[in-house]
Length: 467
Image (cartoon, rainbow, N blue to C red; front, side, top):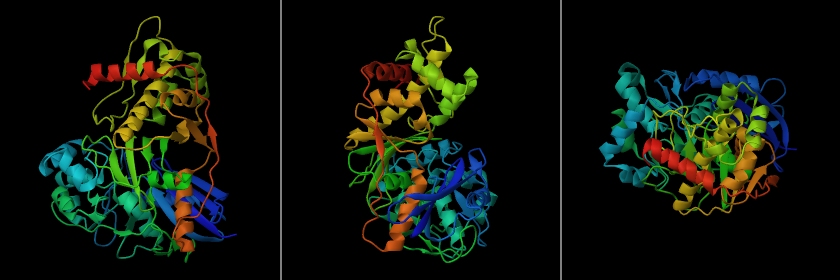
């Protein structure tokens, strides 16, 4: 058996899976936590990778790839030393920088046509502008910018002179264009004020070197890696018509496409995927943590939150939660707070609050699926993944909310599995990635009509935020 490893370096943790290169069967796995927050020292990711791969996890592994949280800004100096903590995708301090950059290029349409997306605080290009404006001494030391997965790959390779990335993760920076397959270094200079180094964009199945140091043994083939959403699509074997809805720290709705997206509204980011195609994507800042925050509010665990939500009627008696607890990216409301509307003495009970939390979180993602449709994405079915997909209440509500069949793939670390599949692809030298099968459970379609839930959510959003 030939073994390959995939690393998922996410916001909350590092997960490693070791798979059979031919079938994708998971042989071993490990996990270690990351520090909480919207910024982090990259060294903590390296330490977590070492902890996750402790013991005999790496025995017999022939190739490895990293799929990491998108957009994070890692900056290093001429000696390869990290200059400051990485700003992560969910750090909204660069919201005003995004607004300024949009205006400087001539508006949202100009950005969508240039790089397939409209800047929001999540994207790396805005974080570089923030750094240049707010920490000029640190900015003056920067010689290279990388994404989190780029930095981990670079460390595995022994910090070569030329870091590497892939087209999927590069497409989330705001200075690489999926439309042309090239960096827009003019936009990078506009944001940061001068040119700095950027990673080389490797081919989807390229071997970029071998491990030189760190948690993995030396001499293991290293694939380019990718962003976490691209890794999930690869791990699931997503096909045309499949829309993946992932409920983790963030919520995402994305689909593999043969053509790039350029949405001037900014709702859909026109990313590239990890195979040479494209991955139009909508992201929300508020997903699974809406459920945990609501459980904390009600002083219950997640299992009891499920029970409460399932005991309440669809529509939660008129309660609607706009779940913008950490600001929001889609819609672009970085300074927003959550709003619970429809409160009356009759409906103000734990069951309705629990139901409103589930419905509000999923309505935001259903809006994202609709935004993909408006970009010409075919929606045949929804694949529901992420930690939030384990919730029985989420499954029941989702089954009626998206308007198409919903399936739940067998539990698994699909981001890490996608990285492992890419590693197997690089090791094989084949034209296509290996054909790894994924089992999925279709959810029964409910009898209740969920259109009223979507309508109430849209009306609450319009009342509170004007659109």
